[in-house]
Length: 279
Image 1 (spheres, rainbow, N blue to C red):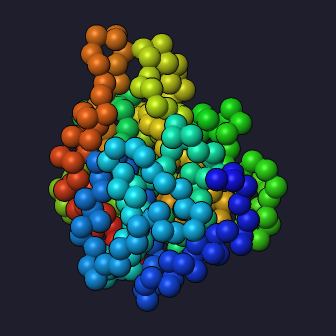
Image 2 (cartoon, rainbow, N blue to C red; image 1 turned 90 degrees about the horizontal axis):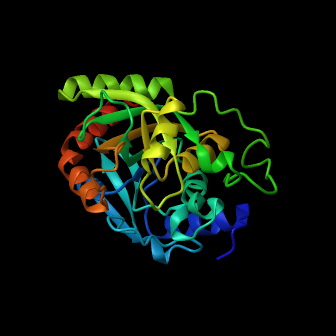
């Protein structure tokens, strides 16, 4: 699969999706590890296997189903991406963010991204939910930026401003939704790595020095492309484990999935409350 896409590729994928649904979503949700069950809450759902969509990348990671679910949630028309793709699966940064480009072509104005993350902040515990206030795109800083290459000015500016990449107004609504649902929400900075290895103790110490509160293997590239296209973003991390500073405990993906499934009801409650608050 090519790693250079044009508006024609995005429009072809969007046209295919339109041919499979009469619904017009304005809100997109990207679901992280262990959180795919949220799609079961969608009413009047049109389900599209992502493998059927032209140019859409195929997810191979456990816990990522590879489906698009379009329907109603709290009276809002949403598109749920049930399963994302990652750099560690061998894709380029442009490929893993292809779905966000297609969402924008479909008319998505608000994007909610969720992920599973390791807790860096010592005040966090496994099972917490963290609203992302900012990110450190470590892979992007190293050159794997999804905006690398020719820029199409019709999609966004050559040098987009990433201030308030995670919309403060959406965070305020999420905090209100969490309070209503009795769910305490942490807030912090997300450190984005390429994976698939979990972090060494030395890497964890380095990440701590950057001021990050959680670490994971996704999200920052998607948010970069969303903001390039003028889409407002809310990010929520499920803290599935505390990172290993000493090397005396093994971190496993099974642990990540298990915690994600256990926390899913809290996340769903917050998301429902947020959607009710969106105009």
